[in-house]
Structures are given as C-alpha cells and as structure tokens.
Image: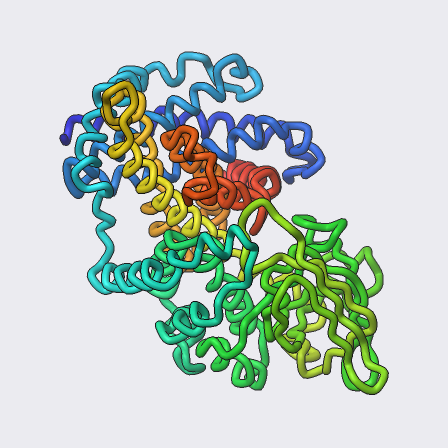
Length: 542
C-alpha cells in the first residue's frame, strides 16, 4: 500500500505543477500596475473557472492522501478519487494547453497511476467492499461519531418519515421537527456558551456543525439540512459585530430554537453582486424606515427574526461601505404568503413564496418593504455598525459555504444508499443491476467522491476553526456541490424508469441537488470572483 500511495502522491504532485503553472500564467495575464485586475481576469473566464475547480479538486486530493493512511479501503477510495481528479484535469487541459500556459507532457508522469486506478477491475474491487458495508469509516474523534449517530437517528426517526410529504405537497416544515431539533441543541451549535449555546470558539464548533448538517441532510436537504444554516449566519454576525445588549437579547433565544431566522441579502437585480444592493434604510426618529424588495429569502415566512442587509448611505458609489445590517422582528407566518402591517401608520411587509422544482418546505420568499420601521436598537453594532453590514454578514456566509458542502455530502450519501439498495434488489436480464460492471464502477466512483467531499469538509472545518479557511470554504463548496449533481443523477439512473417516478425519493434527491451550486454563492461567482482571483493574487505575492 505504501508504494501505491507513493504513486498517488506523485500524481498529485504532477497535477499541482500544472495548476501552479496555470495560476502563474493567469496572474500575469490579469495583472495591471502590479495588481490583479477584475476586468482582465474576466477576459480569462474559461481558464479561471476550470482552474478554480481543478485547484479545488487538488485540495481534496491532498486531504485524501491523509485519509488513505487509515487502511486498505480508505486507500482504495483515495486512489480512485485522485485518479479521477487527475484525469479530469487532463481533460480540461487537452486542446487548451496554450490557454493554460502549460506543456502538453506535464501530466505524462501520472498516466500509469491514472490508468491503473481508473481501470474497471480496480473500481469493481471497491464496489465489492461496498456490497458488504455501504460506507467506509469517517475516522472522526469519538465525541463527533456520537454526535453523528445522534443526529442520524433524529433524521431517520423524525425527518425521513415526512420528507416526501413536504416535498410533494410543498408543505411547511412541521413544528415538531423544529422542536425536536431544538431539544437536541442543534440551534445552539454556533451560539457561544456564555449565551446558552455550545460554541467554545475552537475547531470543534465548525466540525460539529458539519457533522450535524451532513446527517440532517441525509434525512432531507430542506426539512433537516437547512434548518441550522440561517441561525448560524445570524449568530456569527451578531458575535462578530453585535453590541453586548444585542447578543444578550437574541442569542440565547436563537440557541433554544425559540427564534427562527430568515436571511435577506439577495435582491431581484443583485444576487452575488451583494455590494450593489439597493434596498434602503432611511434614518428617522428612533430608528429607520426600510423600503425595497428582497428575494430568495428562505424561511422568511416562518421566521421570527430577519437578518436584513440594507443601504444606509444613499450614495451608491459607497458600494459595500454604505451597507448596514439590521435584525427585523416579525410575527411568524405559515404557508406561502404573508402580509404584515405595523400599527399607528407604520409600514407594511408583504411576502410571497417562489415556487421551485426542489428544496421545498422552507419556502424561499420575495419580500417587499414599504416604510417598515426598525428601531435603532436593531442596527447590528449600534451606531458603530453603520456601514459595516457587509463585513458582519460575511462572517456568517463564509461558514455557510462550508455548511452547504456538508449538506451536499449528506444528500449524496442518501442518494448513493438508495442507488446501491435498488441495484442489489432489481433484476434486469436475469441479473441484479449491481452485478453489471457499469453499475459497480458507477457506485465505486460515487463512493470515492462522497468520501472525498466528507473528508474535505472536515478538513476545511478545522482550518476555519484556526482562522485560515476562507478560500478553502469556497473551494469545498464549489467542488462538492457540483459533484452532488453527478452523484444524484447516477443514483437516479440506477433506478431506471422508477428513478423518474415520484414514489421513489431518489427523484427528490436529484432536484434538490440542483440548488446546491446556486445558493450560498453561485458556482460561477465563487470560481471567478473568489477562488481564481485569490489564487492569482497569491501567485503575485510569491
């Protein structure tokens, strides 16, 4: 096994050489006056996008090299993943060597490793182990294994039995699911201990959130996996910028699940381009009047609190420096629409749910504000928080990307298990679907991708806990979420015609997976504006 891992390491080194060379090439092409120019970077969007995904896969390869040292099945999954990642890099470069600024023979030294570990018989040997166990060890510390088991049982007992009903009827998430998750302490995972939560300020906070999110998403991406995200985003924003009074006022009640959260950043004309949002907050006696429209505000109806990013400086040239963050209190509403009016000539808030092909239950709303009054005490950070809203909300969004990757892993695991079970039970032409080579190879690749996504997420959680994982969080989100589309598609394909039938949950997994590369930063924006840009900047720095 040592020799095989050595060959895997050499293949990773070959890939790293290609990516380093291409990154330097991109940096030179996008540099103006010693700095990376966004306009110049946009002239290289195809390279930037492919390079961002390839670099993200490389980070996953490095993590899997460490995972491989735990045992034989771990090594096999790692080698399968690395071979696929290097092959995919070669496919991106082939015919575009000049665009990448690399020589066409750079990956030649990795070809024998790739050939051996993309061979059908090697992948079939992985599938043989999956037939017996279905999943390789995660190698979490014992306390996190126990947490995973706890949330897995909750997902199995409370979420899965109602997941299909919620999806098929676009129903509300049942209150007993929310109450049960509150009793488990799920909403307090990101709230500091001094405010009644469980966060102690270390790596364990982030790893615990990843573990819980994966298991809840295995139950249902929407009914379970997404319930923790919005409380976490607001909690981290309050911890980063809130006054002592604001923390005491809201954090303990978020931790107990008494207060449900909605997040309002996106607008009809501004999604990932957050710095240009136009919803305005005008200062009046005692507070602010909010006017404008927010969209894709998930859970806004049921929420008790809305985290709202609004423009307090009407001068649009102030960009992100003119944005402030507010906590908007409201009455929770069920269903797909709500209208709220403040008494005594106050403002009005109207929301309508946007119908979607998947990710149902929480409902994503478009919400309009007409002179809605927010007290000055609800400006995050008080007077000192004016113009700092963009930075406060980013404190929550960074980990939101990591949590979305964990959601993708849980969803992939559910799809994989469904595909494996169906393939073992369904007979076609006199043989179980699992006995066909193509089925086994697909399942082996799925298992390698899922375990890589899982281990990558664990690694990024630890990095963020050390204060060094901002770029990695974007990388894991971009890579794993796009992977989830392929995994759920293949799980659906293994079901044949029944995969297209609504009576099987695998069809839900497929449509749910599609949203992962869109929310919490679209795939294109993360690759072009975050990952490729930062890689180019790092290349200049060195």
